[in-house]
Image (cartoon, rainbow, N blue to C red):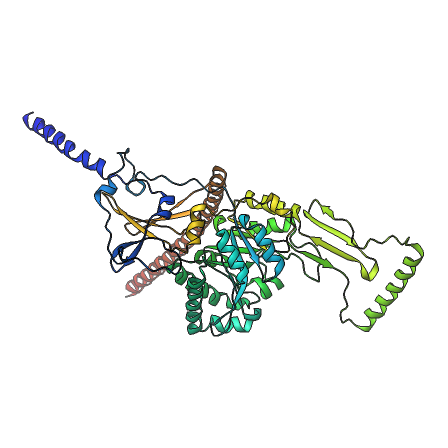
Length: 545
């Protein structure tokens, strides 16, 4: 009893000494907006130094040298009151609200209509992506952004993410670049240099027309670019062609086979899936019919996470008409005869009411607008991507909880889309950081259990905030309840599929083991019969003797 009493007293004394210390080691909740305005830590050697934001071209002040190491003081960590116990990696952390806005990317070219549209609607553009750069086979970067566009982007604090294409969309140039290590390194250096000089947030790689056999080399190229750009604080996205199945058809061999969606999504920050054009000259139709786009999304979501899926949306129109092509003389004679009889009938029966432009009609199944005008060989069918079809694509994006959309292109859009377009997904804090071209920060805060590193990427309005706890990666996602239910349902379906596959593998393995066991028993019985036969023969020989 005396020993137990002294143990209780010692435990009480220990608790009185430890609990105040625990209360003093609680980490204050990180405020992302305050981090955007606070001096930015810069890593110099093995220490951290604070650097205040400065205007471009300004020199650092002598009173605050950039090499002065800054160590977080205990007073900074103990300024908040004590909180109830939580796991060490999430202790007293206030997560930001999940983003309810869509990330928008608007492509543009160096033309007056696109720049005028950008100037008029810059407040609704999340990221502007001018198609202004190209890479040749030696890794040299050609091109420059339009100066008017850059001035508008700086004035309205719109992030700029240029497109980089294979020069002339040549598959030979891209092939030589993908298989030349020195050219790939040169390309990475050129991209980083131009990003620093012009204040880009990153790039989008738009390599088209590549051979499908180059998919491994293209994956390595994107992985290397992503690693290098991320190391310097820039983002990388990839424009990919759309597929609806695994079929090896003409689209696969000539256009989309080079893109390994799962590998590219693992390396890049997001993918812009060009869900257009649905039809070509041999099969006229709409640019992006609603059922086909929905089929594309369902297929691509098997490989691309929803928070990295940006749906490519067209805003232009296509005009389908009859065209001349080289055919055999028999077919040509038949076409001339049909044309003659059609022309004769047309002259006798047509009342002459021709509509040169024609009103827009709406297809409720394809959810696309079209107009028909002209007669005979001059008959035209024009499919138009207007505000109604754009609203249908937005509905699909919300239905599947995608990251956002990528619009081709400014200057071709229906002016009415700006009325239904949601607000930009770039928060004001991120826009301020992008305007001053500040680099992403690495903030490290120590608590009582383990160091926690918060790696923030202000330029990218992403749904993931990465926390590193004692070299253990712990991604934390922010989703709405509907998104969470959808992802849980997908995860449950994947779990059931894996469970069925595992059961089939176990059944197959059990069948193989049963067959092997039966074979073993048969061989053992045969061996025993053989030994019995030998024993009988020996007994007979002994009896004869």
